[in-house]
Length: 173
Image (cartoon, rainbow, N blue to C red; front, side):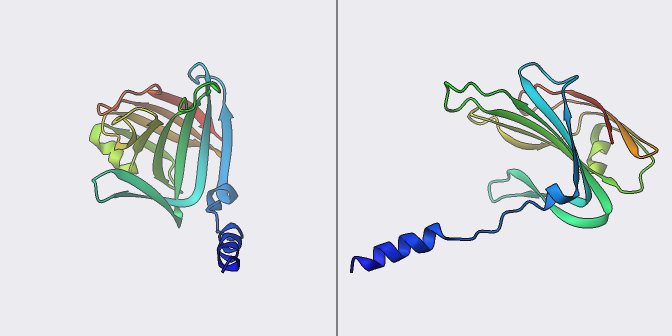
Protein backbone atom coordinates (compact mmCIF):
# COMPACT_ATOMS: atom_id res chain seq x y z
CA UNK A 1 0.00 0.00 0.00
CA UNK A 2 2.94 2.37 0.63
CA UNK A 3 4.21 1.76 -2.89
CA UNK A 4 1.17 3.35 -4.59
CA UNK A 5 1.78 6.91 -3.27
CA UNK A 6 5.46 6.60 -4.15
CA UNK A 7 4.57 5.43 -7.66
CA UNK A 8 2.12 8.36 -8.13
CA UNK A 9 4.71 10.88 -6.93
CA UNK A 10 7.31 9.43 -9.31
CA UNK A 11 4.84 9.50 -12.22
CA UNK A 12 3.92 13.15 -11.59
CA UNK A 13 7.48 14.40 -11.25
CA UNK A 14 8.74 12.60 -14.33
CA UNK A 15 6.19 14.20 -16.66
CA UNK A 16 7.82 15.25 -19.91
CA UNK A 17 5.49 18.15 -20.65
CA UNK A 18 5.91 19.85 -24.00
CA UNK A 19 6.80 23.52 -23.74
CA UNK A 20 5.65 26.05 -26.32
CA UNK A 21 8.89 27.61 -27.48
CA UNK A 22 8.13 27.76 -31.19
CA UNK A 23 8.25 31.57 -31.29
CA UNK A 24 11.91 31.54 -30.30
CA UNK A 25 12.83 29.62 -33.43
CA UNK A 26 11.23 32.20 -35.74
CA UNK A 27 11.69 35.39 -33.72
CA UNK A 28 14.25 38.11 -34.07
CA UNK A 29 14.50 39.71 -30.62
CA UNK A 30 16.05 43.08 -30.00
CA UNK A 31 16.65 44.46 -26.51
CA UNK A 32 15.76 48.14 -26.51
CA UNK A 33 17.51 50.37 -23.98
CA UNK A 34 16.87 53.78 -25.45
CA UNK A 35 13.35 55.18 -25.25
CA UNK A 36 12.50 52.61 -22.60
CA UNK A 37 10.87 53.83 -19.38
CA UNK A 38 13.12 54.12 -16.35
CA UNK A 39 13.73 51.09 -14.16
CA UNK A 40 12.87 48.52 -16.78
CA UNK A 41 13.88 46.68 -19.91
CA UNK A 42 12.17 46.73 -23.28
CA UNK A 43 12.32 44.09 -25.99
CA UNK A 44 10.82 43.96 -29.43
CA UNK A 45 10.33 40.77 -31.41
CA UNK A 46 9.40 40.06 -34.99
CA UNK A 47 7.69 36.67 -34.98
CA UNK A 48 8.01 35.59 -38.60
CA UNK A 49 5.38 33.46 -40.31
CA UNK A 50 2.97 33.84 -37.39
CA UNK A 51 -0.60 35.06 -37.22
CA UNK A 52 -2.28 36.65 -34.20
CA UNK A 53 -5.56 35.07 -33.15
CA UNK A 54 -7.43 37.17 -30.56
CA UNK A 55 -10.02 35.29 -28.51
CA UNK A 56 -12.24 35.85 -25.48
CA UNK A 57 -12.66 33.46 -22.57
CA UNK A 58 -15.95 32.55 -20.84
CA UNK A 59 -15.71 35.77 -18.76
CA UNK A 60 -15.24 38.00 -21.81
CA UNK A 61 -11.53 38.55 -21.11
CA UNK A 62 -9.31 38.91 -24.16
CA UNK A 63 -6.32 36.64 -24.81
CA UNK A 64 -4.39 35.56 -27.88
CA UNK A 65 -2.75 32.61 -29.57
CA UNK A 66 -0.14 32.54 -32.30
CA UNK A 67 -0.57 30.27 -35.30
CA UNK A 68 1.72 29.45 -38.20
CA UNK A 69 0.93 31.55 -41.27
CA UNK A 70 3.49 32.18 -44.02
CA UNK A 71 1.77 35.39 -45.17
CA UNK A 72 1.83 37.12 -41.75
CA UNK A 73 4.31 38.35 -39.14
CA UNK A 74 3.63 39.41 -35.57
CA UNK A 75 5.35 42.29 -33.78
CA UNK A 76 5.53 42.03 -29.99
CA UNK A 77 6.93 44.83 -27.80
CA UNK A 78 7.41 44.14 -24.09
CA UNK A 79 8.27 46.47 -21.21
CA UNK A 80 9.20 44.71 -17.99
CA UNK A 81 9.78 46.86 -14.94
CA UNK A 82 12.69 45.96 -12.68
CA UNK A 83 11.46 43.88 -9.74
CA UNK A 84 11.92 44.85 -6.12
CA UNK A 85 13.34 41.59 -4.76
CA UNK A 86 12.13 42.47 -1.25
CA UNK A 87 8.49 42.39 -2.42
CA UNK A 88 6.82 39.20 -3.56
CA UNK A 89 4.32 40.76 -5.99
CA UNK A 90 6.39 43.59 -7.46
CA UNK A 91 6.36 42.32 -11.05
CA UNK A 92 5.00 44.64 -13.74
CA UNK A 93 4.87 44.04 -17.48
CA UNK A 94 3.24 45.71 -20.46
CA UNK A 95 2.96 44.21 -23.91
CA UNK A 96 1.78 45.52 -27.25
CA UNK A 97 1.26 42.97 -29.99
CA UNK A 98 -0.05 43.20 -33.55
CA UNK A 99 -0.03 41.42 -36.90
CA UNK A 100 1.24 42.63 -40.26
CA UNK A 101 1.35 41.10 -43.72
CA UNK A 102 4.75 39.59 -44.53
CA UNK A 103 5.01 41.59 -47.73
CA UNK A 104 3.93 44.92 -46.22
CA UNK A 105 5.91 47.89 -47.55
CA UNK A 106 4.03 50.65 -45.77
CA UNK A 107 1.21 50.96 -43.26
CA UNK A 108 -0.51 54.08 -41.94
CA UNK A 109 -3.42 53.42 -39.56
CA UNK A 110 -5.16 55.38 -36.85
CA UNK A 111 -8.04 55.07 -34.41
CA UNK A 112 -10.30 52.05 -34.82
CA UNK A 113 -8.43 51.14 -38.03
CA UNK A 114 -5.60 49.89 -35.79
CA UNK A 115 -7.75 46.77 -35.43
CA UNK A 116 -6.82 45.89 -39.04
CA UNK A 117 -3.62 44.64 -37.36
CA UNK A 118 -5.53 42.99 -34.47
CA UNK A 119 -3.50 45.23 -32.11
CA UNK A 120 -3.84 44.47 -28.41
CA UNK A 121 -2.25 45.87 -25.26
CA UNK A 122 -1.54 43.76 -22.18
CA UNK A 123 -0.91 44.91 -18.61
CA UNK A 124 0.23 42.39 -16.00
CA UNK A 125 0.85 43.20 -12.36
CA UNK A 126 -0.57 42.72 -8.91
CA UNK A 127 -3.17 45.38 -9.74
CA UNK A 128 -6.58 44.06 -8.79
CA UNK A 129 -9.06 44.52 -11.63
CA UNK A 130 -6.60 46.35 -13.88
CA UNK A 131 -4.76 43.60 -15.73
CA UNK A 132 -5.25 41.64 -18.93
CA UNK A 133 -5.40 42.33 -22.65
CA UNK A 134 -7.34 45.15 -24.31
CA UNK A 135 -7.97 46.09 -27.95
CA UNK A 136 -6.12 49.21 -29.05
CA UNK A 137 -8.51 51.61 -30.79
CA UNK A 138 -6.91 54.99 -30.09
CA UNK A 139 -3.59 56.00 -31.63
CA UNK A 140 -1.53 55.99 -34.81
CA UNK A 141 0.68 53.36 -36.41
CA UNK A 142 3.19 54.27 -39.08
CA UNK A 143 5.15 51.31 -40.40
CA UNK A 144 7.54 51.29 -43.34
CA UNK A 145 9.80 48.57 -44.70
CA UNK A 146 13.27 49.85 -45.58
CA UNK A 147 15.51 47.18 -47.11
CA UNK A 148 15.55 44.37 -44.51
CA UNK A 149 14.41 46.63 -41.66
CA UNK A 150 10.97 47.66 -40.47
CA UNK A 151 10.63 51.23 -39.21
CA UNK A 152 7.92 51.38 -36.55
CA UNK A 153 6.33 54.52 -35.10
CA UNK A 154 3.41 53.80 -32.78
CA UNK A 155 1.55 56.16 -30.46
CA UNK A 156 -1.42 54.71 -28.60
CA UNK A 157 -3.63 55.10 -25.58
CA UNK A 158 -5.73 52.66 -23.58
CA UNK A 159 -8.68 53.99 -21.60
CA UNK A 160 -9.48 50.79 -19.65
CA UNK A 161 -6.33 50.65 -17.49
CA UNK A 162 -3.33 52.86 -16.66
CA UNK A 163 -0.30 52.40 -18.90
CA UNK A 164 3.36 53.38 -18.85
CA UNK A 165 4.34 52.82 -22.49
CA UNK A 166 2.43 55.08 -24.90
CA UNK A 167 4.97 55.45 -27.69
CA UNK A 168 7.21 53.00 -29.55
CA UNK A 169 9.63 54.33 -32.14
CA UNK A 170 11.97 51.53 -33.27
CA UNK A 171 13.75 49.98 -36.20
CA UNK A 172 13.26 46.22 -36.28
CA UNK A 173 16.14 44.47 -38.02
